[in-house]
Structures are given as C-alpha cells and as structure tokens.
Image 1 (tube, rainbow over the protein chains, first blue to last red):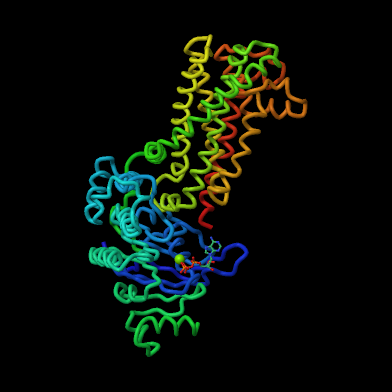
Image 2 (image 1 turned 30 degrees about the horizontal axis):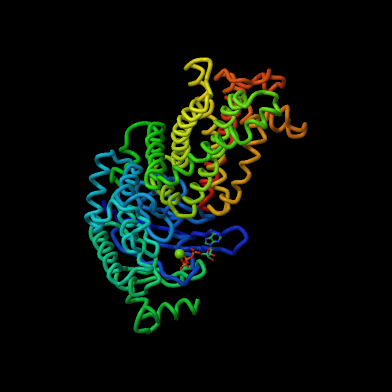
Length: 246
Length: 280
Ligand SMILES: Nc1ncnc2c1ncn2[C@@H]1O[C@H](COP(=O)(O)OP(=O)(O)OP(=O)(O)O)[C@@H](O)[C@H]1O
Ligand SMILES: [Mg+2]
C-alpha cells in the first residue's frame, strides 16, 4: 500500500573504504513511493555504493537510511523481504538453467516448491524466456541474461526495486524491453531506483533524478528542471555542466 | 515512521528460524548438486582423485612401503585404505574453496545476501552438498577397496561408525574450505593454494605410519586431525595397525570426534563474520 512517506529516504549517508577517501560524502535522497528515480553521475561517483548500502549489501559509516519503511541499519531482514536488486553485481547462477535459477531463488524467498514452479513459469513467460528456460544461463545472450536477472529480482513482487545499470551493454531492442518492464512495474506501484550511464534512459524513465559526483549530491529535480537549470537543450549537456561545476 | 501494513513475509511466514535455516540449506545444497549434474565431467574429475590414489599408492608404492613396514603388500593395502578414505575427505577442500570463491566473484553470494533467507544457509548449503558428495565418494571407495581385497572385519556397525567419522571430518574440512573461499582474492588464487592440501593429507597417519617419519615430522603428523580419524577408522574397520603408542593414538576415537567439532566451532563463526564483512 502506498503511504505519503518516501519509499527510499536517506540523510547524510557517508561511507569510506579503508585507505581511500570518502566514497559517499553525505547523500540525501527522498524517493516517493511508486516512482522511478534516477541516480546519475560519472564513473566512481558512488552510485553502486549507494545502491549496495540501500540493498543491505554494504554497511555505512554514518547517516540514516530507510527503505520501504524499514531502517536499513537495524532491520536488514525487513528490508530484504521488501526489495529486489538487479544489475552490476547481484547475479544469477551461470551453470543452472533459467528455470532452475528462478525456482531456487523463489524457494529462498520462502515460497513452497509448487508456488515456486508456478512463479518461475509466469516470469519465464513474461520475460520471453520460455524457449531458453531449460538451457544453462552461461549460454544466454547478454540481453537474455539481463532479463533473467530482472525476473529473479521480481520473484516476490518487491515494493522497492534497485536497478544498477540495467541496460549497460544491451542492444537497442533489449534496452526497450527493459524500459517497458520498468514502466510496467512503476505503473503497478513499485518504486524503482535506477542508476544508468545513459542520459536518454534517465530522461525517458525517471520522474526525478539525483545527480551525484564524488560522493555528493550535486543536483536534484525532474529531467526538465535539470535541463532548464543549466539552460542546456538536453540532459547530456546538463550532466556535463553540473558535474564539471561541482 | 508509519509502519506499512503490506503483510511483509518476514512476519507472515510461520515456522521457526531453525526450520527455515534447514530448508534454505537444502535449497542451496541442491544448487551445488545440480552443478554436478550439469557438469558431469567435473564430478568424474572429483571422483578420479580417490580412485587414482588407491591405484597409485596401493599398487605402485604398495610393495615398497610394505617392505619398509615389513609387511606383505596386501597387508599394506589393508592399512592404506582407511588412510585414503580420509585423504579423499581432505582433497575435497579444493573444490569447496574454488566454488565459494567463484560465488563471491560472480555475484551469486551478493544476490543471496540480499534475500530474506537464513544467512548461515548461504554457506551451510555448500557444506551439506559436500557431505552428500562425500557419501558418494566413500561408497565408490568402499566398493573399489573391496575389489582390491580390502575388508572390514568388525561388522556393519563398525563400518557405519567409521563412515560417520569420515563424513564428520569432511564436514569440518568443508567449513575450512568455505572460510578460505571467502578469504582468497578469487578462484585463481584458490587453485594456486591447492598444493597446501598435500602436507595436510600426507603429513598424517594416512599413507605412511608416523613412526616411519623423521621425528620432527612425526609430531605434527600425530596431531593432524586426519591421523585421529584414520586411526579410529582403522580400529572400527578392524584393519591392521600397530599398537597405539602415543597419547593421540590411544585416544583416537575421542579425537576423531573432537577435532572436527573444534574445527567447525572455529571456522563456522569466522566464515559467518567474513560473510557479513564482505560488503564493507
Ligand atoms: N570495494 C571497494 N573497495 C574500495 N573502494 C571502493 C570499493 N567499491 C567502490 N569503491 C570506491 O568508491 C567510489 C565509488 O564507487 P562506486 O562503484 O559506487 O561508483 P559508481 O558511481 O557506481 O561508478 P560506475 O559508474 O563506474 O559504476 C569509487 O572511488 C570506488 O573506487
Ligand atoms: Mg557502479
């Protein structure tokens, strides 16, 4: 159910890796439920680090983080029961078939065996993987693999979905398919936090965008606001101007 | 903050934590066993080690060792087989370490860490798969040994107890492998460290009795966890063994239980701590 509180909320999120400077130097985020929110920034800006922290995969040094109404630092299990994650890091098993992957992860999401099988069928159908279902994932194309990854992250219909560069390396057609899936999810009420290198992707999918650079938020707003804030014509220009000026 | 009433699964799921940990462990174990079904050549390769060991040590070195020990070759093989059973358990560490290191690298472990599953099951699934695989390996070795004239002399009870000890040892080594897999930088490193399993497997009462070793080697060999299991299983099988002269030898049965339990008691919590720290 959708409440007024943001589905993702952080304040002053900081993290440094031993022997390095701060990877995150005070990130504030507020993502309303049921929206697609973009996290943009140059390489090394801290996008993946942010996603990993919010998905309970990494710890943070200070600040606050809430996901789906749960405190990320204190209620990891509660967060984990409500999120899905796909992208740069969390992966599927390359040796198992697509169906075996879905069934295994469904079981680990605490579904009964029969329920898991039914859910696997449903997701294979939805992501156009029925024909490849029995083949080892190693033999999948990049696009098929990404679709399977997405399918796995949707097994339990998460309230909040983290997508870390979900379309990097995909051909235009596969990219469009992922975009459609993301829109569909947002329409059905899922909150999506998406990182991407493609500004067109952010422009088309995201209702709001947070730009980060060197672990700090450098701009926040709707795609239109960001464009007009620098008087630029498109998001590429805005991106370059904002991250350079930071 | 308002608490949302979406019936999140953590609350609605019934059954105790322990029950769920066991279910999750089985699901993860099944994954590792399915790997072997998908890659039968790997299973074959794994089974090759004990088979080759029986053939090499039993027949190539067997006569010579028999001479050194002043017993006929057949009697040496009687002495040898329990040693090879335990040695096979030790060699399993390699596969465990590599597979865990691959899961760290490939991101499967991260995926599992993001699930509302039992954290210990992420790792315990591997240990369970190893134990199941050990039972298969031991069955093959028993059959092979019997073919070569090896015998258990003290009945079924002794055989079952001995197999239990061997499987327990494998479980302990599995946790060693899991811990190492979480510590190494990647599967390549795991493969390079594999040579370390040789002293573990051989500086023990496995192939050569410790009293034939130089003194400085005999001491670590006696205290090697493998030795306790080997001596204890030799007793349980009723296989030839010299009279126990050392403290460890006299308490082999106790030590064969204590060692693995102690190893698990150390490695399991360390591995869990390491798993939690992976995200740092
Ligand atoms: N495990 C780690 N150990 C040490 N430093 C790290 C680690 N992970 C990330 N960093 C550092 O933290 C900073 C932020 O990295 P992060 O991966 O979050 O960036 P990103 O915005 O996702 O970049 P990209 O666009 O390249 O994916 C970088 O300076 C990176 O070098
Ligand atoms: Mg990244």
